[in-house]
Length: 467
Image (cartoon, rainbow, N blue to C red; front, side, top):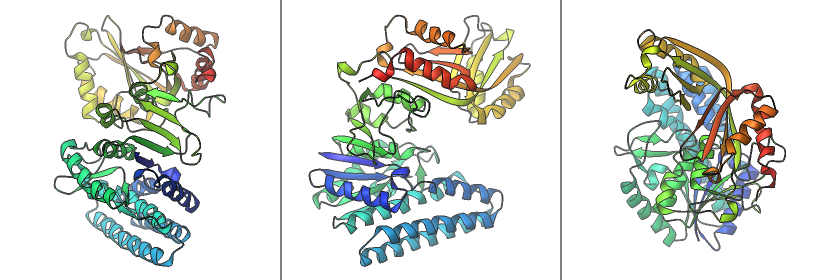
């Protein structure tokens, strides 16, 4: 099989983890053609983000300390992972060249006293550039030939929207096929850095947080992979967060559409655009654990088997949100009111997570993350209060509870079961939305009621008996 394996940062955070990953890759390579995509090692991206914050605040010393932390972490890993002295020496030499480049970049940013979106992407790309060197060297150390390639080197071409770039798929497909076909013919395992590509001018661009999953599916669709495996520290998609529901079960099979909904509602932090490249090619994906390789994980497919078509598949929740109730008599029957509100928020880079409007049109309720709440309220007050908006009411610390499952479509009585369970558990529902696709039903409760709501719904729909 032609397999693409993507490893998350938690799967490659210690020397032992990296050696285990290399051994797993070595054994799989005996019967399969492999392409490996890697995230940065745990905490590296966070450290790089913190370096950028330190530069903005002119804390050069803090930035320097963080660079030293990144350098020593990767040097220690290199020394412990690689047994063969020749490979270790070459690896440390390459890492040192990267560290010198990283320090020069940070010095330049400090000198200018600013962090542009373009320099930020270049800075953040170092996490993956360093991790792929370690993984590739660990595979070479076991006697299997491997090379490391950045997203730019493998041929991912994107637009120039730094921080949230999109791939130019036709160009990307041609370049990736050409690069990887020559490696396949020589039986060399490519280890590719996720999260980043380059625009048409060769400037490094990134896909945003969680972008390594997106890199994996872009590359997988370009090489027509038989399967794509997302390897992380979880066994797969679950019926609920196991930290909240002790008897949460692993979902053996879900559809692409269900997985997209689960990704949006935080069942696993998957980049929302991850599934786009798979939909046309219908490539199956598995979400698996790198620590428990005997477990097959969750299969994500375009057409799940009939046995997996449960009414509700999972209950997920996103805590720490704010609810804004927007009221105004002049909103009634005025075309373009909602467009004005959402354009105003979009211009301030605020993502609206949920929307509900009553038929009289006199109020619109929206949900945003707590971190965006102050900005959202002040933007609406400054731009629209006294014009189309008469009053804003804000409620903080709210949680979105979402039920997801394609089997809800056309099933009578789902909503009554949901709100019956809420009533039994004395949970007050502040807002409800359901799309016409009926793939999910979402509602808002207080943060303090979120765990109770999730447990109650998990029991009500008997999700512990799934599969």
